[in-house]
Amino acid sequence: MALENIVVSREDSVGLIQLNRPKVLNALNGALMEELAAAVDEFDHDSAIHCIIIHGTDRAFSAGADIEQMSAATPAMMLENSWINRNFERLRRASKPIIAAVSGYCLGGGCELAMTCDMVIASETAQFGQPEINLGVIPGAGGTARLARAIGKSRAMELILSGGRMSAKEAEMRGLVSRVVPGELYLEEAKKLAREIAGKPPIAVRFAKESINKVYELPLSEGLDYESRLFYTLFSTEDQKEGMSAFLAKRKPHWKGK
Ligand code: HXC
Image (cartoon, rainbow, N blue to C red):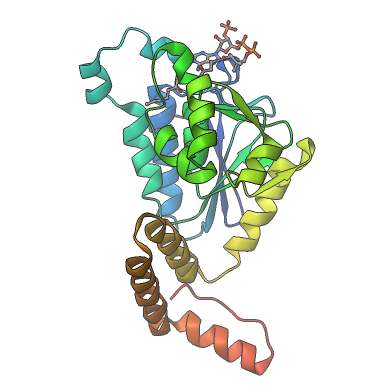
């Protein structure tokens, strides 16, 4: 597929995807979302890639769904061609970790995209918000569901009903982002984290991601059962034998991803 709305690159075992509609602050239209989901799918099935980063520009991660594309839509059109929800679902199903490296505006569908990723590293310039109320709609791709879980019901309610914004510092304090770093470093810090994760045993990374995401949605007792089953399963991998033997022999482990 010829890419017109994203830029895809790789640095060793890290796959990078840059949203590339800077003139409209990386507004998410159908073409961009198809390209983004396809790029994530491709990295997810590429055995040489172990971690994925999605980022925008310094000015905007993304200002949300493309308002021009949505403005004349009917419910049937939104349902039939739910370009955001359908493709977010493809991202959510990726088995490899995805880091959102966020700078500048991270609004509406952009904030929902960041929350669909597994971790968020934010520049101190980042601003998060769900301003859909100002357009006569509500967040429709995880905003009400994920934001309330991430930062608590009361603050999520305030942000979504007022259409206001939250600073990077507040987002960090409330747990929406894992770390805020100086503006010029956000992408470098995301790459550093991605390289660190890419150097870990891949099946254990995959299971850890799966367990955290799954258990987040389950009652505690079911979550604990789910986690322990994945934990026991890892004792069938060569990497578990290697990791523990290497520790005991005081040497570095060599992961095989088996
Ligand atoms: C289409 C957009 C856009 C968007 C910005 N632009 N956001 N186009 N869709 N979401 C365009 C502007 O029209 C403008 O185009 C150019 O990008 C630069 O934006 P400015 O407004 O001139 O920049 P600035 O003054 O810095 O203001 C930035 C901003 C503002 C605060 C981010 O652009 C803004 O409020 N954007 C809309 C944010 C929003 O409401 N997002 C939620 C969308 S709904 P021109 O041609 O004039 O240069 C949504 C629903 C998700 O996300 C649910 C899906 C299922």
